[in-house]
Amino acid sequence: MDTLGQVDTRRDADEALVALYTAHYRSLVRLAALLLHDTAAAEDVVQDAFVAMHASWRRLRDTDKALAYLRQAVVNRSRSRLRHLKVVERKTPTATPESAQIHGGHVPSAESGALHALERQHVMAALRGLPHRQREVLVLRYYADMSEAQIAEAMGISHGAVKSHASRGIAALRQTMESSS
Image 1: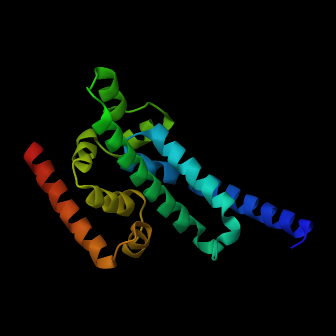
Image 2: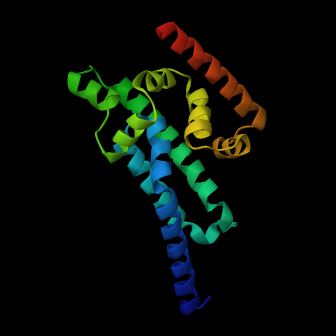
């Protein structure tokens, strides 16, 4: 391909990503924040997903599926971040009040205000108490408003597994909420 063709391809990728960013950045940050419980880390995860997509735009076979690719990248990067945090916690010799606040507390931002407006505090605490897969399915379903098929694709699991995780997660939330009332 000649230089002019490469410039046009880069320009097309840039325009497409700007449109995706404008339309979906906030919802992707909310998704990652609900998975990570940390808005600043969520913003980093989403930025990294956009940067990776920009770098691999030419290899994207179906540009109409770019949003699905971004959602999956955000979920996968959130999982990686959580795994990393678990390793860090295991390797930390003693827990200090500062580290407990960093790992368990919230970093105030504009997004945190929106999150608190969406759900009451005890619902979020109950959601955090769910097993990882159940929490992911419920967050993708009820906060990202994704269909079961989209969730299965984003998480790399079967449609039946999505239904199972959702059913178990809802039952566990119901039990937790009833016992706290």
